[in-house]
Structures are given as C-alpha cells and as structure tokens.
Amino acid sequence: MKWGRFAGFLAIVLAILGVTAGTSAHLWKSVKLGLDLQGGFDLLYQVQPTKDNPLTPQGMQAVLQAVQLRVNSIGVTSPVVEKEDRDKVRVELAGTFDQQSAERLIGKTADLEIYGAAKQTKDGKWVPVGKPLIGGKDIKSGARWAVDPNNNENVVEVTFKDAKKWGDITTKYVGKTIYTFLDGQLINQATVQEPILNGNTEITGLGSAEACQELAKELNAGALPYPLKLVSSTNVGPSLGTASLRATMWAGLAAVVLIFAFMAALYRVAGLIADVALVAYAFLLLVAFVGLGVVLTLPGLAALVLGMGMAVDANIITYERVKDEMRSGKSLMSSIIAGNRRALRAIVDSNATTFIAGAVMYWFGQGDIRGFAVALMLSIVVSMLTAVLLSRAMLLLLARSNVIRKPWWYGIGRGVVAK
Image (cartoon, rainbow, N blue to C red; front, side, top):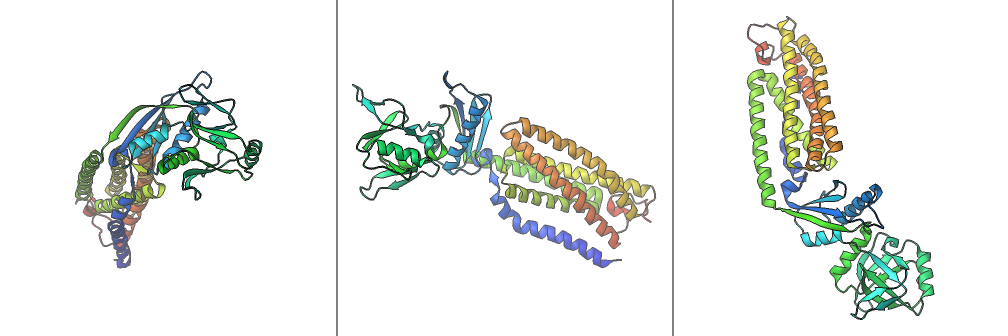
C-alpha cells in the first residue's frame, strides 16, 4: 500500500470540505440577488416617437443607453434594462428605494435649453423665442449640486463641452438677459455680467437641494431621444422574494441530499468521491457568480440544480464505463483509465449540446430566460471541471494507493475480482 497517495487523497477531500465550509456563507452574502428574490420594482416604458422624430434602431439603442445611465445614477445594485418588443423598455430595479423618484428620474425628458429671448403670455406663462443658444446636450458629464457661498442659493454647477461656444454666447449677451427653460418651463432668467470663457456656469432657480440633485443626475445621464410613457409598474415585495428564495433553497437542499445518498448507495466510495466533487461544483459556482457579478434569479437557481444533475450524470456515465471494463477482466487501474477515456466523449457531447441550447436561449431570450441561460452555461463549464477532471484525479489517486482494492467498493458486484 502507498499511504502517501492515500494521505494526498484525504488532504484533497479535507481541503475541499474545509474551504467550502469556511467561506461559503460569506460568498453567498456577496451574490447579487435578482428582483424575484430580493424584491423591488418592475417598470415598463413605451417610447413615444413623433412624425418629425420617428423611431429608428439607432434611436432605440440611444434610449436604452440613456435609461441605463439614469438607472445607474440611482445607485441600484445590478439593474436590468432591456428592450421589449419594438418600442418598449423594461427596467428591473432590485432592492428598497423611492419608487416614485426612480420613475420620475428614468422617464423624465430633462430637456434643458438656454434662450436669448422669451415672452410672457397673458396667462403668465413664459415661452421661449427663437432657437436655443445652448442646451443640455452640450453639457459635460459631471454636473453636481452645490450651494452658492454668496447667497446660500442651491445651484447646479455644469461645464459645457465647447467652452468657446459658451464664451462667445456670454460675450454677446453681456448686459442682456438669458432665459433657462427645463422641460418647457422657465426656471431662471439672469443678466450676463461678464463673459464666461472657461465653460463653467451655474444653473439657478430650482429652489431645493433635492431638485438640484435630481437635475444634476438627469444632466449627467443625458437627454432622452424620445419621450417615455410609463405603461406598467409592478412592486415585488421583499417578503415574496424571501419566501421564493427559501422555498427554492429547501427544494435544492432536498435534491442535493437525495443525490448524495443515491451516489453513495450505488457506487460506495466512488459515489462519495462524486459527492465531494459536487461540493466543489457548488462552491466554484458561487465563486463564479460573485467574480463575474452575475445576478441570481429564481430561474437561475433552477438552472444550478439542473447543472448539479448533469454533473452527477457525468460521474454515473464514467463509473458505469469503469464497471464495464472491470467485468471484462481488466485490473482496477486499467478499468479506471479506460472507463474515463470511453466516457469522456459522451460527456463532452451531451454538455456541448446543452451549452449550445443555453447560448441560443441567451441570444434570443429576454429577462428571466437570459438569467436561466447564463446560470446553465456556467454550471456546465464548472461541472466539466469537477465531474471530469477533479473526480477522475481523486479516483485515480485513491486507486493507486491500493488502500481500497475490492470492486464492491466501486459499485461492482462481489463476483468480480480486480487484478
């Protein structure tokens, strides 16, 4: 007997179990949970094109980018912004925050324009005259709320992309009044005191700090190419998400226990090796989800359980091939090597076809379908590493130690004797 190899085998088992037990709880807390598990809001917007500004594929892409920037400014963890149908945008915001503020920030046009002239109608409303001198699209990202130290007024500090353009405008309008409109409403009229040549300026007249902060976020996100209409808003309560997660976790735990018991009962020591490989599979998937920033959803959890079944299936195929080789009269070592070689082709083919199916679902699917596809493809890759490489290495190491030589311990009937 070669006790050194057996000690190496035990060291691998203990290392896998120790690392998993010691870090899994921390890793699980770091996994980003989706809307259906954490709770939050599901918002559906419809793009509103006009005759003068019809909807184009490029315009729809610009809408998605603008909405993504606005959602990012809210500070939501792992938001989902996707195109739905031809003219709709679905936004999923997981977590707890002000829904009304989010709806307003995402769908508001934030059309800021500065004019050189304006007139007041009989009903007291101000309307711009002529073309705008400059607008929100000319502002660099980085607008921020501040307090003017001279009068303690809340302002939004902005910098125009073309400093020369703003310098020429302020030079031309020294001593004259310019008018600032936000979404068609006059928010400020001010007399230009001197030319502003560095592109910096302050937008005043908003009043509260909250209004200034919101405008700064909107300006940083950029103007929407088309107006958006809120079609539906669904609130997913955190209690529902917690209940769904708990139910799914219990179902997954039951599946794991049954799989472990089945493998140990049918394949004895070889089955226990497969069980240890499954522990490594689950741990590596957690690492992959955290490292890649994947958002875990209920369909994703289902894909992980499915992936575990596929990983077990790979072990079963291998062990059955090993049993066939031993029944033909080969030695234990020869059977393990030949059985692994024969099983590899079938395992690779079956996993490859499932991976292709997952890739197709991701390419053509949306929302939860994509989440399922991502989790499925990741589980396939990880299962190939654990069920093929790790299990094979552990089985060979145990067999070469000669500590356990009887075929019965590898799931083979007592009548077969290993050479």
